[in-house]
Amino acid sequence: MRKLENTELERKSVEDFKEAEKTPLIIVLDDIRSLHNIGSVFRTADAFLIEKIYLCGITAIPPNKEIHKTALGATETVSWEYQKDVLCVIDNLKKRMSMSSQ
Image (cartoon, rainbow, N blue to C red):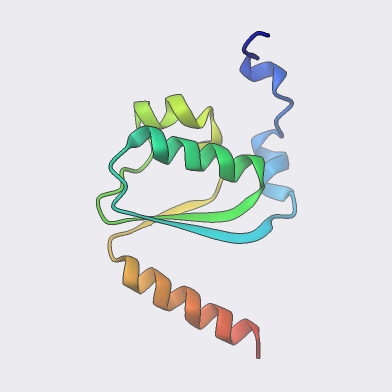
């Protein structure tokens, strides 16, 4: 078995990914020190068409060489946002959920 090249992965283009229907999941990463783990979350979010990633606290943000190395380009497709305070992110997400359920 051999490792597939990026071009062989049959990934959606950036434009196709942005237009695709997303899985209604939001990932919140808080104080993640491992750049490889952050990249892995981006890659997983890309594979499952996750709606958005929030990076909080000391979690590193793209562009970053080590994140990019693991993410395999997913930092370009997956919607993400940095917010310093994770509690504000969670409060805003809770408010958004309660407003959408009314």
